[in-house]
Length: 152
Image (cartoon, rainbow, N blue to C red; front, side, top):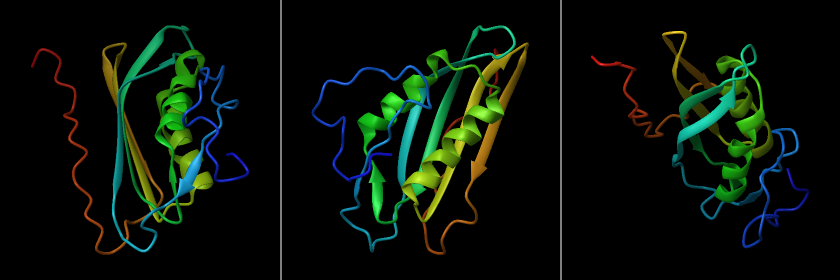
């Protein structure tokens, strides 16, 4: 995370980080810090690498969070998620790791991530993580991603 709340990427030419560890997530002040609301990011074309075969894995990620004092800057999030293209990790590690990093750095009131992974070896794997129970009164809609149906 950048030390100040001045985004490093917004309005700048930015290269895709070589790895998630090199990616810098920018946060900006929440314009409505006292309002209880949910923000959603969907990444329907997320990719990482299988740690066993080195082949690409594909997922549809949905990240929901109730902001606290800051919100994640979307360009830096896009670059962070793109940095996984050459990162080898199991679906569970990748999905939970993204959610935990965002939660630890951004410190939202609540966060959840759904990783809807396309089949590997004929088995689709869906991974879900959340920081705890959602705050009372927060509208939490369904993530809207259907379970994998194949030709079904």
